[in-house]
Image 1 (tube, one colour):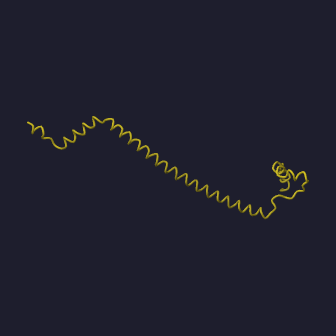
Image 2 (cartoon, rainbow, N blue to C red):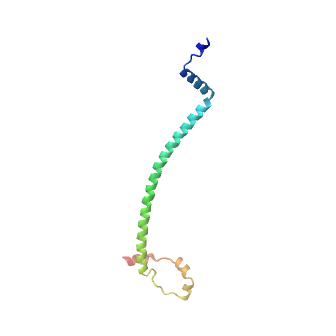
Image 3 (cartoon, rainbow, N blue to C red):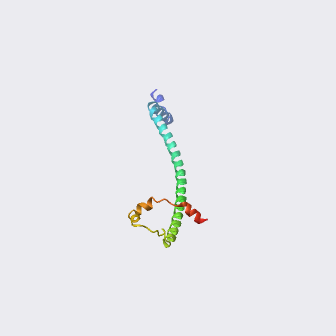
Length: 119
């Protein structure tokens, strides 16, 4: 009688132990499933982020190239301006000299005269 009851196979024993463990730790299985879902969502987020960062890097490189081109052009223009006189000489009275910086800062520009002289 005792021998007949002990005549279990190893597979039956493993299935029995796993069944008992699953019944006792159902909350653990639910937690493992939730963590697995979060890992999948995070990996999808990382893949999307990699593609977005690659696109952003290409934009930054393109903008950097444009900025360096503008910088070179400005250097050329400044070299040309340095050979010419930037501000034409104006006759100044002693009163105007005392307010030189502020007068030049708030001076009205004569755009009409420049437009007429260009035509």
